Length: 217
Length: 217
Image (tube, rainbow over all chains, first blue to last red):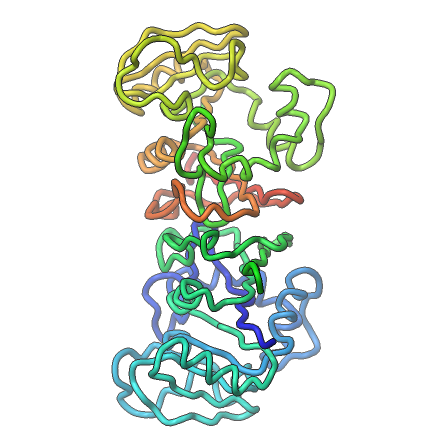
């Protein structure tokens, strides 16, 4: 059955998935880019952004690549899509990623403010869902047609889906940095009671990769 | 100069350093023993508890052993010493460790309730300090006579010393388990602003070991 998966979501050792003060210049917030040192050099990352020739292989790339496999749709929180808050002033903001975003499948963006679908190059279409996390998941599963749905983030979006017990598998990368403040992914979220268990952990030079599964999945 | 060090303090992936409901039967709280799977099989642990012949060597044992080196005194929060709360009803409680505790140096126990020093076998004497964390550190440094002082825990004690900027080095072991609830070591503690940085990280099969240093130390 189609799974809802989190892959490659990176948090600091003090538990933060993004720094404070996200802006157009700082999509990951202050200090956020430090989190992704394990990811950016990988062959998978480079390939996603148009450079299929280079990049590292190994543990980090293995996790990066698994995150791209068997995906039929994505779900993103609105802040993952952009820095605009409140009602859309116009249609000018088209995501962080330029004309050809690295999704290549339908992407469902959670928002309180309706907006027409936005078709991009390369197979990515952004759909704006105002009916909440379950509606977004239902639409994403339908679009995915049997393949998995990947939940991209951010922190608050993942927390909502975890709390509802809707995430089937989660891969987190613990990056060996301190952010000090920001959005905390796991605080006050009792994953153990929600049925999650650690299924594997392995470290590279740049991160500790941990996978979680929900019992009974 | 004599350093104040945290060594081998273990937290879960969701950030908890101890489970809830500590008791005489459950000194680490519910789920707490899972945290220490990396530590118990090591040669250092076995040697501390009277079995110098066995035990594993390797990354886990390296960190365990480093935690024992160059120590002249320890500081413990009261709950690390025992489950008794409030005024001491009598002198019956003599620690979790039996007649010959694995410290072999003076140990300063933070408490709000005065008690006479308690001399144990093997060089360990427990001193009960009612004047707060700075007084305990001053007395421990004096007793350590140039060697380092190790801060054993628990969570609230380490948080107090970190917040005061008094910890010079900290080694944490991140154990690949979820506790779900308990005492959170780092939440709302801005280590980055307090001057701490990650100095090294390395993983074994059973834990990811991370060392932190304070800038300028």
